[in-house]
Amino acid sequence: MIMKVKKWDIIIIALFVLLSFVPVGIFAMTVAGNEEADGVYAVVTVQGEEYKTIKLTGHTGNEDILVKTDLGMNLLQIVDGKVMMFEADCPDQVCVYQGAASKPGDTIVCLPHKVVVEIKGTVPDEDQTDITTN
Image 1 (cartoon, rainbow, N blue to C red):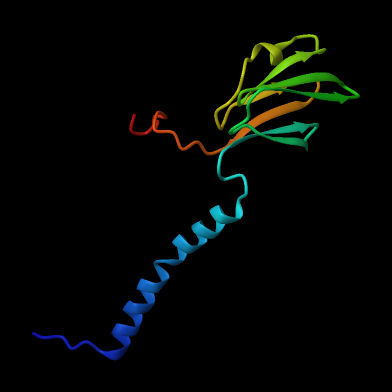
Image 2: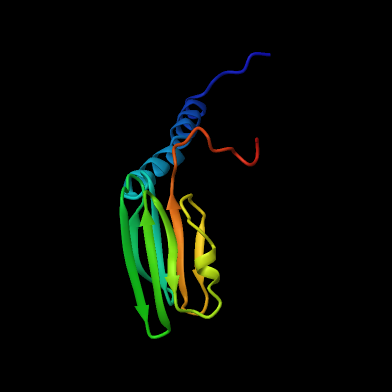
């Protein structure tokens, strides 16, 4: 039995083929609109509001950032693309002992002062292991 291809069949197939490219276009526009997509950066949040954004990719040397609020003082130090809580006047000092953060997803948190440092961005690195495939 031979089936005849109708005009509307071709139109519907062409429409589905064109619609299959819509997600690719949306993804491309989203990545192109993100100015921080190329590299790693640290977002410092104080009491729930963004305080400062620091680009870590390509950062060389030392930079100190003083975060002073009515809750206390924190001193962030950026050294060669890594950020750490160098000093704080909170009683427990947990934030100081967390060490340096440099990979997307790393965080440093000072609960008494409500200071959060979150590392965001992308790292085009072949050495990173995908946790789903190892």
